[in-house]
Length: 104
Image (tube, rainbow, N blue to C red; front, side, top):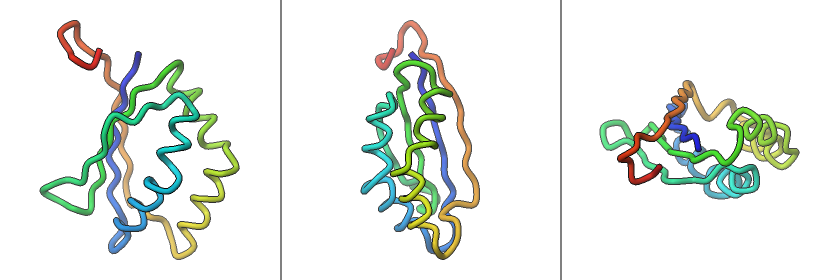
């Protein structure tokens, strides 16, 4: 089982729209693609940053490929970015649990 920690820096003034897109579209689509949402946080130091943790069932790259090709995601992304991208930076780190991890 693979975990993925992702960090999104929202474009100025767009954190609300980014959170709405996750709430209204992204999380449900993740669930359908073998991407279990463990948690979502807004950084206490910078409220313009969204951080979340996924657990991938199966191959992470295949999960992402299926997600990105989903017509509902393509539409939700396009609709939410009529006035420009919601993010300025996205980082991803894949994690393997240790033998003493409670999430393993």
